[in-house]
Amino acid sequence: MTRSHHPRLRHLAVGASALTITLALTACSQSAGGDSGGGSAEFPSETVEFMVPSGAGGGWDTTARSMQAVLESEDLVGESVEVFNVEGGGGATGLAQLQQDKGDPHAWMMTGLVMIGALQQAGSEVTLEDSTPIATLTAEAEAFVVPADSEFQTIDDVVEAYQEDPGSVDFGGGSAGGSDQLVIAELLNAAGADAGAMTYVGYPGGGEAIAGILSGDVAVGVSGVSEFEEQIAAGEMRLLAISTAESQDVAGAPAPTLADSGYDVDFSNWRALVAAPGLSDDQVAQITETVEELHGTEAWKTALEENGWLDFYQTGQDAQDFFDSETQRVADLYADLGL
Image (tube, rainbow, N blue to C red; front, side):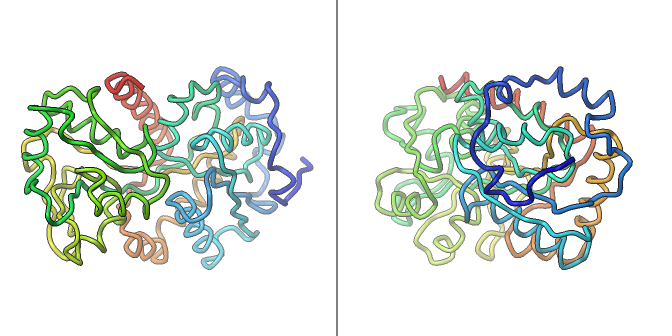
């Protein structure tokens, strides 16, 4: 198979035919052993091109570049790993571009919960079913915070105020329809409140969200724990709860959970690795073996700890089942939110 190693040459046009690839076609290709004719060839035999379907500097980008560093420093691939960014559509643009590499095990892509929401909100014809699941990798709890001078002392205070008057409590976080808004919907559903009445302000980046929360533009802020930890430690924000059922230390102290307050919520913002569609079983096994080796290194464990990521490693059918369940869960939450 002849293909360019430079991402700029693989970067722009995706025809309509790529957008209409279906799960059935992907499944047929995989059951037939892929169309590359190289299922049993040594992997990798060329540069691994690792797409981040978003801009530089975000969570997907940080995860991919951490993986790149470990793969190369631990000599797990033999060849180089080239990380490149494709922005647009919450990952839809990058996922559509991945269709051009059908059958190629050297074409990887970072994905996560945010992409599922963006694809559903856009009504995209291309979905995660049009890729090859390799592994879930990391997860991060969401944090509910307020400014230090807020009248809300606990998450119960927020819920009670919302139940009395949804318009009295506005929330803010990342882009509308993303993980931050979804976890708020799960909390309100668990409390028996109307999530569809939520007022939500989506900020384009973490810095803007922090500024909006501290200035009082929104009453309650929600984002990944790592986004707010500095402000919590400095006493500028009060942490009301985190979204995972299991507690963790935040700013040096055990964090209260939504479950501690009686809300049946266990939610995390996860990230995962997929590869191009149409891979053979042998190709999938070779990529999975490489990622398994990465996961077992001390360097990767250090990366998890330094970035505040939870180890959320699943492969094979477990990863596929998780993608399927998350797709349904997001669809249900979007229905509740009227998105």
